[in-house]
Length: 195
Image (cartoon, rainbow, N blue to C red; front, side, top):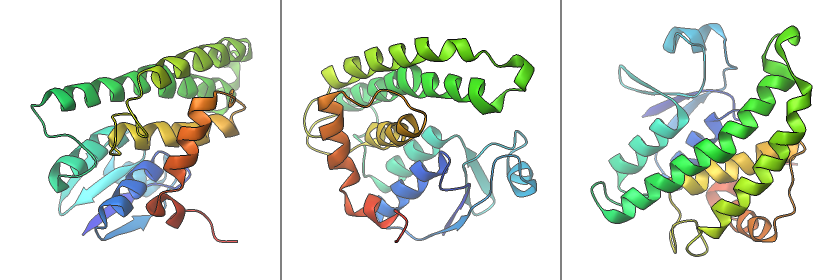
């Protein structure tokens, strides 16, 4: 049994979605970053943290990769060209999409007020839109790597939600269509709040 430490409104959503896709049991401890429990399992206080037995894994991408490899799903096998291409796409998204959104968040509410630079946000929105086009140009099928969903799809779909709430551009037609499809997956739908 896995335990996920982290609020579903954080990057922990990526891990929860992965576990739902895999159909494996888990428990969720919906801790906010920097809570006492988060600091207990990760000295930085960041979430998510995956606990398996007495082992802790931190960083959402490391957790996703571990789970995909362990369960042999949502990934290409390690040591294959397809896996190298998948990892390349994952790093592209982390560097060019996730990092831009994280920088905007830092300058919106994370950094101390006297360290924030609001003037950086318009350039980050421009960069996000440009980088998103690059990612979509590399898409190989209905999912980023072709016919099957893989780790980078989970990361990019999560980034799309983050971007929308942060007021980043959402008008890339290929991206809109892609996100509609990834969010339609039963495992994703299961995690949406019930009305």
